[in-house]
Image (tube, rainbow, N blue to C red):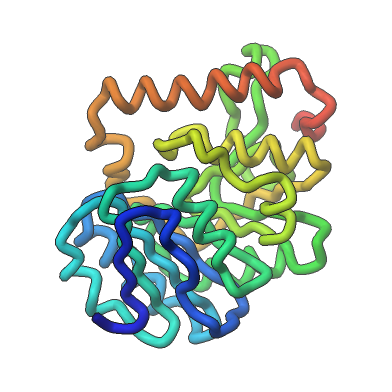
Length: 250
């Protein structure tokens, strides 16, 4: 087994991926569709430098042969054979990252240019603790049940397609909710935790595109809706009505 390929039964067994330090770490959670994940990472490697680490976490007892050619001095793969949920997996990668910035990235996101530098620049001076590609403002008139995309600017929430975060700020709020086994709405829950801690979030245009989002379209609909609702119910229970944590409407 190559040194930067680690296989464990449980996420709790994971200790370290590397001792090397990097400018930023891209964290990618992979739950099936390994060929698409390989496409995502190949594009990412073509549009980022050697100072950007890539941490890939594969959930489940899968044949990861398609990903192994990606391994190099800045690309690391860990496989959790018994499976692990979205929130717990990303928290593990967040804690293990040897960099001050971490980019949460979905394998459906395809990098077409330098998307990393402008995102890191936005959070470099700590005025903003997170910057990302897609997000929006909570629709308070809809009783917090939806989010409106207002384009570039300060936002209430960012989505996990491509989200750069200050690692310390993320850890200070407890990271993602480990009860979020499915991705949908977990990024919103995390964003609102940052906002509640007076963190500022910025949405920006970046050279990215989204391929087929298997995590949504190719997931069992009943499972998708059940898990999405669980997370959104937590959001409503904890945050709805606390309009003071939201940014100015625009």
